[in-house]
Image (cartoon, rainbow, N blue to C red; front, side, top):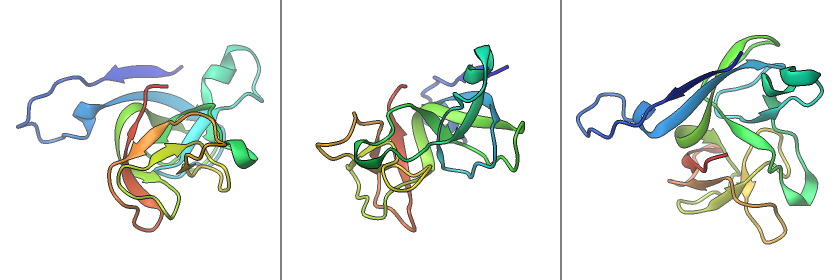
Length: 146
C-alpha cells in the first residue's frame, strides 16, 4: 500500500529544507527506476493495484505525458521494490531535457522515457518549472500538484 507523508513546516533553521518543501508518497516499483525519473501509474496491473505500482513515464510523441504522478526520490532496482515519489513540491535533481534553463516550464516525456521535456504549445499542460539550468540533464524543479 502507498503511504502518505506531508511536510509543511516552514522554519528557515531546519537542516533538511528539501523535505520541508515537498509531498512524498511510497509506491511499489513496476521495474527499474532511477533517482530523478518522472513516473506514472502502471495501468497494466489490475484492480486497485494500478494505483499502487509506478513505472518510468513513457514517451508520448509530440504531446508529452500528462499522466505522471511524480518524480523518484530514490532508485528502485527491480519490480516490487518500495520507492518514494515526490508528488508535489521541490525536487533537487530531476531528469530534464538538455536545454532546460531556470524558469522553463516542463511537461511530461516527449522524446526520452522518464525525462521531463520543454513544454511547447503542442504539449499537454505543464507539470513543473525548472529552478536552475540543467547540468547533465539534471536540474532542481518545482513539481506542480498532481
